[in-house]
Amino acid sequence: MSGAGALVGFALVFILTAWTVSLLVSLTFGAIGSRLRRLGPAAERRITALAAALPLLLGATVVVTLVIRSIAGHDHCPAHDHHAHLCIAHGAAWMEQPWAVALVAAAATIVLARLAILGGALLRGRHAVTQVRDASTRLGEIRLVDSHRPFCFVAGLRRPEIYVSTAAWHGLDADEREAMLAHERGHVRHHDLAWRSLLEVVTAFGAPLTPGPLLTRWEHATERLRDDDAADALGAPEAVAGAMVHLCRLGASSAGTAAVGFTPMPGALRDRVEALLSGQPRGDRAGTAIALSWLVLVVAVAIAIATHAEPLHHALESLLG
Image (cartoon, rainbow, N blue to C red):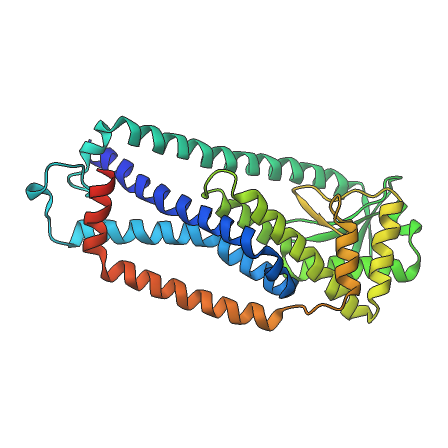
């Protein structure tokens, strides 16, 4: 029973850490969202991804530190038997804490449900893309699909490809088609679909209601960044904006979970067009500087956790046990 009890105790610490950090991240983004956007889409995308990974990373760091402390540190458990211990050898008492078992079970259910929903969506998307791929015809770098529905998207985690319907291909003029493809090439080149899927896995470990806003912010920043890529490639942001507007007027809809597409999400067309034509900075330098600062901060926090393992261990046992 000590092994199962220790698992409950360490899982409780992970939940406390990861959920607290994810709530703080969510509140911080709510407070600085507009200023973050002004840094540019590259910076906003990178900061959002790093912030999304922070709860899982810090939660795992705390747990690993406590496990190592439990194995290699001084065994104080016999002298402090008035509470449950965060210890592999003496953790059985956690199984006698109904609230701890219930909280861990509830959190595990939430995480597994999120991952199951994501896995199901990816499997359904893969099946749908396979059907579309079988019905498509290779035309240079794209796969042309005979359909009266206008669409253009990138699909495929390992080998992403661009899919365009005949309605979209023939509905746009040559410059608009090139703008659309330049945007999608950015998605292919940077493996955005794979990164988004990874981000969904990482955010599954955050507190309830926190993953959605982060994912939405990352997706919108990514689409604005790919708009900038297309504008730079063509030297004409107006062509990219015009292609977006024209495709929406043709009746195109945004891509689903298994794909990333050129068509804006509902309500995002105006925002993306204005961002594209406003000449705002991309934010590459700001994103790199913030990423380096984030790395220094994470390393510093990890060192602080490791060097203060003993008082942290006692504090968490006193608080939770």
